[in-house]
Amino acid sequence: MEKNLTNMSLGEFLRTRRNRLTTEDVGLVSYGRRRTPGLRREEVAQLAHIGTSWYTSLEQGRNVNPSEDVLNNIAKALRLNEAERNHLHLLAKPVQKKVKEQQLNVGLVRTIRSLDPNPALIIGRYWDLLLWNKAAELVFRLPSFINNMQQRPNWMRHLLIREWQSLNKEDLEAGIKVLIAQFRADYAHFPNDPMFKELIEEFIQSSQLFREIWSLHDVQWVTERHKRSYDPRIGEMEFEHVTLQLPTDPDLKIMIYTASSDTATRLRNLMSIREH
Image 1 (cartoon, rainbow, N blue to C red):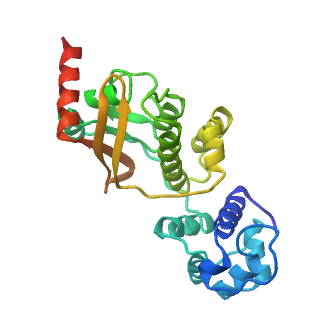
Image 2: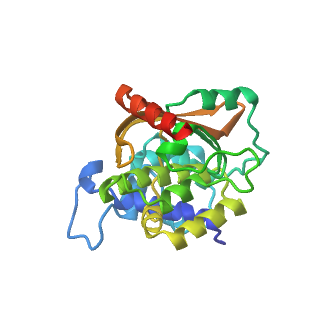
Image 3: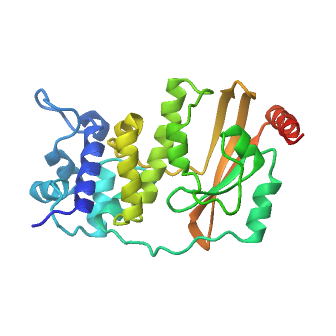
C-alpha cells in the first residue's frame, strides 16, 4: 500500500489528537507506566470500534478508505470538535475545490470603505489582501490601498513579519496560533494546490513561530471574538472581530473589527490628522 502526502497529513493529525488525550479523559482504566503521553493506538481503536491494525494503517499514512461512519467513530473517540471533525473528513476523503478567479463587486468595495473608523478588510483564497479601508491601514500598518498594486500583501506573511510593537510575546503567540489554525482549515480544501504548498514552505522556513505552531496540526473556525491590543501610536484598542463569507464565494473572507466608542473616536481623530 502506497503512501501520499495527504494520507501522511491524516496520520499526523490523528497522532496529535491522540497524544493530547489521557485515559481519564475517555473513561478508560490505565495500566502501567506510559513511556509517551496520550492514548495508545489500540485504545483509540477500541473506542472507535475498529481493528487496531486498521487504525494503525491510517496513522501510518497507508492508502486505506475509511467510511463516513468509521471517521465519525474515530472523531468521537478522539473527542474532536466540529472544526476538527470536518478536517478529519477532508483529510481522509480530499476533494480539491475548483480554483476560480476572485473578484470584488462595487457594492462590496463601497461597503468596506464606508466602515471607517472600524477596520475592515477582505482576504482571498491564499490569504492575499484584496481590499482594506483606511482604519485597517492605520491599525495593521498596511500600505495605502491602490487598485492596480502589482502584488497585494499576504495577511499571514504580514502578521508573521510585522514588528507587533503593540503586543507582548504571550499575546502574539495566542493570536498567531488562532490564525494558523484557521489557515490549516482553509488549506485542507486545497490539499494539492501548489500555491498553498509554496506559502506553507515559505512560512516554515522564515518563521520559527509558524513552524512550531504548524506542527501541532490544530484547526479552528473563528467567526467572532473579542480583541484587545495596545499600539503606542494609538493607545489601548478594543474590537469585536467578525469574519463573514459570501455564499457565492466562500473562499473570500470579509473581516470586520468593530471598534469600541473610545477606540473609534481615537481612530477617527488620527485618520483626520493623517488626511491633512
